Image 1 (cartoon, one colour):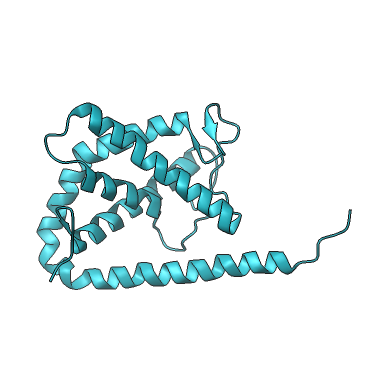
Image 2 (cartoon, rainbow, N blue to C red):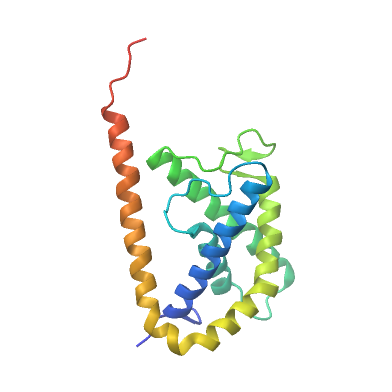
Length: 185
């Protein structure tokens, strides 16, 4: 028995999340390399996945129905990834004191977590993904769906284990930093 969210079965959601999280990891590391930084930059997870890039397309797929007017689609393509980026940045900084990106020096930014320039980039990337990439990814899913329904529990288990170990690693680091003596000034 499949669980459905909107019009998508849970195995499809896991597939799309996995594909887009991996594509996000490639995009982000390629951007890092193209700006003179190392290709393999720090990541919350150890594996080659950026969940932020998986959540945004999955939410957009669930929210955008065929026949939606273009202005609504564009608004969702702007808001969904921007809100996810802000929430992710706020949680990473608030809970773990981690900043994997910092827009503090950008014009039109909010708490260093989001800025207008990248909101525009998310709009373009999201629209391109929904219009042109997702139909191809959906075809790929349809072609391997019979195999995927047997394989996806392993992927869910992988992400669960990855999350547990990442939380443990980052929380341990945070607790160790709290225990360090702070010099009196």
